Structures are given as structure tokens and as C-alpha cells.
Image 1 (tube, rainbow over the protein chains, first blue to last red):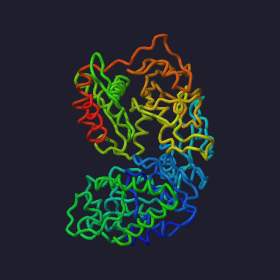
Image 2: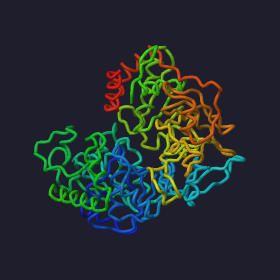
Image 3: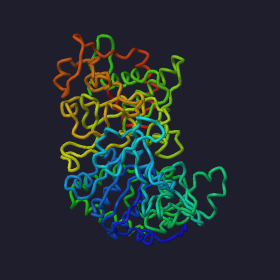
Image 4: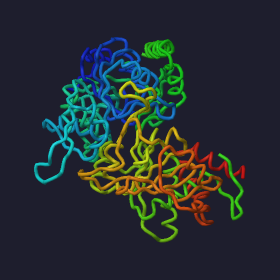
Length: 300
Length: 256
């Protein structure tokens, strides 16, 4: 429970055929773990995007690891459409489970509560219902003439995300990104990469304890977004970007880490745009991933 | 975007859209705006500033994905819960396609799932369209490929029958014109055309049928006090979240 391990050991938990939940870019995306997963090449993953994804989901698709994608959107934001996703849709390369954001949240909340489904307003009349045959319309049992959609519980095998810090007891700071709690409680196992590990229990401060995911819900934690153990003293590998934590050591050259982390450092739009341009072709995508992995290995 | 000299005063096409959005939002207390929607955000900020200057009701703005303009503490689900509770008065939706019954398509063109053109996806539209009372459809590009007779994919339907629904489309604002929507008749009505556009041009560029008065008025120009707020306080506030867009607004003014 809340074991602190090397990044490779964490990534090895993601195995073929698993259902894996990943958060939106504003929640903390485990990109170094994603690179390690790309190297391991588990197949036929069922990726649940909570509730949308960007470059991370597009890279998993581009590498051919995705058998099913369940998402409310895939986009690179200002860098435009997600090229490997768009190409895969055209080719029918994976099973596509289009969703709408609150329905993804509802499915996870149902699993969090241990109930088989949750009702949700709206959706009726949307073409989503034509292909989401796992979503049903029932009659409100408490009032007449009130059809309502129910969505089944989503229980991922794994929830994977990146956070600013964990303590050595396995508690993880999630701030007000409460969907990370839902993901972790819904999933069978939760894997977290963090910028740094601190010695003091994060639950010690009553004023901020509500922004902490307790170790009970966390299985494995790997430190250092740059490949495990790259961080060192005073604030993790990426500390220099946010300049919020003092950094006494000169950090190794930054691997491509274009997704920002709340409270720590912003996104790198130029790098995301570079990905968007290269990933237009399978060859360009492969070249990008090669460089991405190499830079991470060198940094570790 | 060009700035056209006006006999009364100068304003850019974008400033007109922002001022029109502020007018469409009149009376709301909480408006939510999507992450990459600077014009709707500017319209909401303009309403907030104008209400303050007029001693009217306070306007709260939630910009999704923004740290500055985001008071939610319960994660991504809180916006949807907040809307479900009736605490979001207005929201903006767009679409790759919008049809004459206000159905919107955020998924793609051609047969699903192997769509010819694929857009990001439905996001929260299939829910928010039902629960937010005043949804403003906003799409700058006004062309027959956007405004189609029938969308290829219904991400969210414009109207519903026999279903609990308190929200839906109230207006459609484009780069050329402003429409109102009547859910009972499932039809848009052309309210006004922006300066430089004509009713005939709007008809030619719209792929669906709609009602229009015999004489279509011009969209009212922003008044001097509104423009002053927009060019001062609102542009400064915008720069915090949308620095490039604020620069664009300033640049268009300088070119006038």
C-alpha cells in the first residue's frame, strides 16, 4: 500500500487487456510513466479518459497499445486535433466509446460507491445513445413520465496520474483535483508518479488533509517525473520549471514534458505543437517517441 | 479581422461580438465559459464590469481550465453538478455543424464511427445543453458547411419532448448575424445582421431555413461607455487568461 518504487516497476503494472483510467491535462498526467509503458508495449488497453485526453492518449494510440478508448474528447488544445487519434478513427483501429464528460464521472462515482449504475440527466436524443448501448434509459421509479439515462459503473484495473508530492507513508497530495480521488477509489489499483517524496505525513496538517489521497487507495508511487530518482534534494526533477521550490542542483536536460502540473509548472505549448506536427505521420510519430524515450533515459 | 470606420464611432468586428455576448448574457449571475473561448469570456467579463458600473447584480464567471477564474474545489465534476443544481445560468456551445433545429455536432462528418472528418468529441454538451437555461450558440465562421440542414451526428439535441429539460439554446451568434431560437417551433429567427453584412448574404451562407423579418436591422453598435470598459478594464482582465487574444484586440484598435 503506497509503496515507493522505481518508475519501471510502476509501469510494469500496466498489462495487456487492462482497463486504465487517465486524467485530463489539467489534473496531472504521468508522462514519464507513459514513456515507460510505451517501451513495455502492453496490448489491447482499454483507456478511460477522465473525462478527456490529449497527448498522452494520442501517444498510447499511436504506439498501437489501445484496443478501446472511452472518452468525451481527444484534443491537443491550441495545437489542434490529436493526429494519431484522428487517423485511428478513420481506420477503425480501435473500439471507440464516445462519451460526455459528466457520464464518465458518473460511471466512476458509481464504482466508487460500489453501486452498479448511476442515473444522469440529459443525453436522451443524442446520437451517443445509438452506440453507447451500455447506457440505458429507465423510467424514474419515483415519478411518472420521467425517462432518465443510467450509466454503468466504470471500474478501471488501474488509475494512473502525476501529482506534486507524496509522503513516505504513501499519502498523495491531490489538492482540489478531486476526480483523482474518485479515480483511485473506483480503480482496483492506483499508480502515481510524483515530483518529490516528503518526510512529513501530508495528513499531519488538518487544514490541508482534505487535499490528500490517503495511502489506503494508492498502490505504487514513483518519484521523479524524469524517470525515477531524478529529482534529488529540494523539489523533484522538474522543480526548476515552476521555480516554486528552491533547487540547488543543476537539473539534467529536460526531457519532453509538455503537460503542465497544477501549482508547479505550466504546459509547454511549443513542445505540444512540435508533437502535433511530427505525429501527423506514423513515421514522424515513431521519431518523436524515440526522442522522447531517449531524452527520458538520459535524464534518469 | 478588419476594423471598419463607422459614421458614429469605430469598433472592430470582434468588439461587436463581445458586446453582443454581454447583451445576450444580461441578467445572469453565474456564467461558465469553455477553456479556449476568449470571445465568450470577454463578453462575460464585459457584462460583469458593466453591471458593476451600473450598480446591478454581481456576475460570477467560471472559466474552465483556468486557475484564476475558477472557484470550484470538487474537481472536474463540480461544473456539471453546479449546472445540475441550477447554479449555472449561462454557457456557450459551438460545433463543427449546427442545424436549423439547433442540434449540434462536435464529433465529425460522414458515417459514424469512421467519420471522414473527426473533431475532438462531445465534451459536456450532451448534459449541459439540457440543464443550463441560457445556452448561447457561438460560431464565428458563418458558412453552409457549418450551418447545415441536418447535422451528421447529434452530439446534443436542440430540443426534447417528454424528457426532463430546463436548459437549451437561446440564441445563435455568428460572425455575420444574430439569431434567436424558439424551441416550440424548433426554428431560428434572424434578429440582426452585423455591420457590413446583408440579409441576403446571411441567407446564402446558411444551409438551414429560418424566419426573418421583411426588414432585417443591423446589430446595434456598442455604446461609448461599453466600448470604454471593453478597451480598458476588460482587456486588462482578459490578458491574465488570454494574453494573445488581448494583444489581438489591442492591435485591431491600433489599426483603426
